[in-house]
Image 1 (cartoon, rainbow, N blue to C red):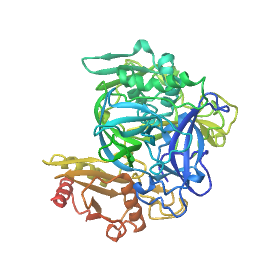
Image 2: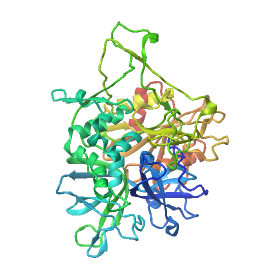
Image 3: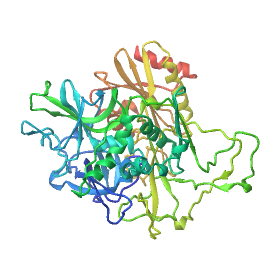
Length: 570
């Protein structure tokens, strides 16, 4: 199971694995007028195909049954939960994803990018050959073509993926993008009189409406300051409105939020090019973007809100009994309630927010949002939780109101905070990696948390006792921490997992036989094998072309740990 992503009721519940093949069109939802539908094209994996196959194999045209390819419809507010290539079982997202991880170097300007339809042809042949990837008949959503190696179609990215990755990072941001509120009703998003830009400090100053998170502020600030980001943010709604009178199925446009060079970490696959524009004979079809190194137009972000209930900085504090109730806080969900798109939520139920770990933008890694200081805090939180017996059974991302007590309001929110209560050994692990970065010629960093590698995978049904649990009684999963190390043009991966009291397992240093970067999908497969072997690295036999070196927990200081790692590298 993919940790953190909730169950989505619209996926088939038939004990089969389904792959998301493509994003389709935007269309109206007659049952939830406040939120349009997004079409999701899916197809079932053939019965004898395993989700533990390689990521490359899972992206093949031969692993799914296209005779059963179908379309489901979800509210656009649930877009942050979905990615092309994700695998779903009974409505639950799995850790495996289709598409190999690759690092692309791109250069973006008006001459290197162009919009094309999914069924674009060159010399009367499909740009994306049917035998290479089948996005579904009639679901030819727009692609962004990027020039690469002098081929104007060298890299192909679904426009909806640009929207998902750069702009619709949360439920609230997805609603703002598709409603056009930032352009047409900006006062619903920000207090425009209290926003600005400090050129000297390169600081963006925002006054956000209460419902928006700090992470949303980075996206809004980028759109307000950068013309390219403004275009990409506002184009989806503008193009939908432009064509809404002519068709019920709408394919939005968007754009990159920057110009110039950047590195993209993506999942995707090579597709054959059967025309003279391509010198290599191959193009790259991106299924999902996971990281971008492009700069932001500001270095710092200050975000404030009306009715701010943050504690005052000064000594003149007001007693809680004399404070006014502020905007109600939300409840953090553990993703145990399914999301649905058939009915509006009930506004009287507590808002529940599902937090999704992210490492999207290299430019803001490690940066925190500043808050304005004040002498007094005149507001107190008005947090409301429903009694357990009154809690809704389902969540929805619609923005209107229904009287159905079974449906509450749910949100997807991005978070860049690390997990809490890390094991003591993980702290030593992190400190050792920091020390390793000081060694000349070595580059090392902790790998960002993603659902495929955050925990040891389960090998049995979730309600059964198993080694994968740190505590089977409470269903507490074993956490994993991973670091990537680059030395002498070789990639290594260091892995440690959480241990129970009196357990004594080894740390593993893993490398591909060609010393290439190890993808999250490959690491997930390795962790699954490790779980089958109950933590004994040397018992793993079925991972070809992979070298595993183990180190016992014998060091007394992080410095000794660092020396042990470097000794294995040399």
